[in-house]
Image (cartoon, rainbow, N blue to C red; front, side):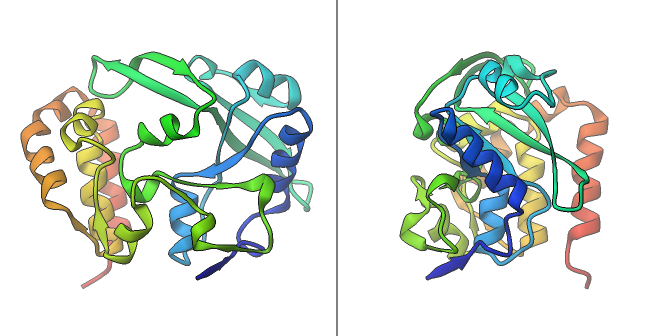
Amino acid sequence: MKYDFADKLPEYVLNIAQDLKAEGFGCYLVGGPVRDIVMDIEPNDFDLATDALPEDIARIFPKSITTNAKFGTVIVLVEDLQGENQAVEITTFRSEADYVDGRWPTKVEFTTDLQRDLGRRDFTMNAMAIDLQKLDDDIEENDLVDLFGGMEDIQNRIIRAVGTPKERMLEDGLRAFRACRMASNLQFEINQETFQAIRETIDISKQISAERVRDELVKLLVNSPKP
């Protein structure tokens, strides 16, 4: 199967990938945008991942916001074809550990290994990537970086945690709500092991602020299919 990226990716995103390539760094489209494109859904934003360190990203793109650089994330401001400023989130490949508050890791280790970066993500459908520096107008299914069976789960309409479900749920108290929201919005089913992990770890959601839980519930209600 081919996926037509020509109409899905704005030029400013591809330009970012080429700017990173010129400096010797890789650049991948990751997470939700990849999932949306293979499901023929228009992406709302474009999350990029790279082996460049945050300070490298900020150097290459002077118009950037580095508030969350310690977590590896830099927001780059670029102009689109209409001259409008667009914010693109670029994150250094990383692994995470020691989640003590049910939301944020206390230990972040930058890496050059894309597999380690994808392995920290929540669900298999969000753990796919595409190398933007090798992108043609069309990309074959087997050109997707899909190390955890995300494409198969999408085809089977399954939401499955990456790796050990209970570990993924304990890392972030919002993941249980996110799984339910995505199941409702996309009309998918949560696989048995992931659902059991949600049941066993639901108490961790008590550590999450009411505002964040509210935001997830609003997304569930607004975007779910109407009866």
